[in-house]
View 1 (cartoon, rainbow, N blue to C red):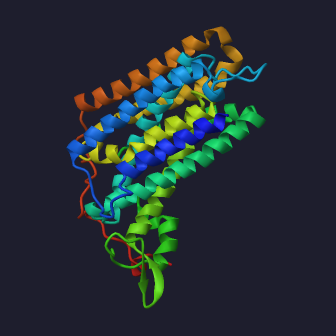
View 2: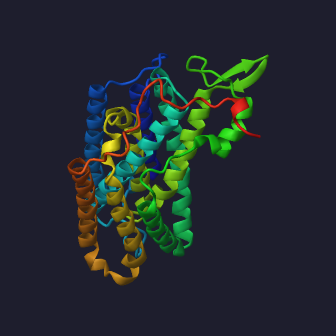
Length: 351
């Protein structure tokens, strides 16, 4: 009967999307900073309430949640409601922190393609829907791989440590040139040179063509896929319960649009958060490599609490340090209708 819980959660997600992202409104709209902050807080409150639900659902095994198969020795599966609640909230915090980098890149993408602020809502709407589908597929695939091949856990751990190393060595002032992106080069052959209101498609001389808005959406989706390759293994390092992995991802993604507009003027101020993510990814990667073979099962609850403390303190430290030592060399990306770069047109994209 576990499918009932999954179905109820997906129905909840659809209801939230319908009201928050504007399925019942045909007008493209943006959010003021005040409204965005309010909705960001509302999503955080929803995540907190869902944490309470997770505690009781796993403690009492509602509809089969949290029932571990006999003989299973997996430290990443919860034994109690408290463990499940900690695992879910750790996953949510991790995904939410990683989404800050995602938001920064989305701002660069929308700026590069000169997406008017009135149309950004539409890109974010469909971008979030696509992200939910892609994350669901990747989580299902990861769950199957881990269940069939235990070595995948070690591969994920090593990959996270490598990702942390790459993030540490990445240059602060490195710029992304979307004009050289292979997807941009391919799709630009059928690109309409201008926006056509908030449409994704139009016609040129009777032939179907894409608009710059659709091209921006495709780049946003492919970028989220790259971020998911890093974030999904990270969550598996905290819990390998499919329901907890998926729900923690969903709650982080649902608040992405509100967080985007809420952080419009603050994106560049979190420059030291990168080092927090380096610590977290490196820690989770090391945890995946050693927890099962070198840490006794009796220490499982301590490990979960310690992991939660590492994540929370790292994030708080990164935010506080960013404000104490502000970045001076690079301004935050502007969320505006008139960024400096031009929308690529077919004659400007080399063959």
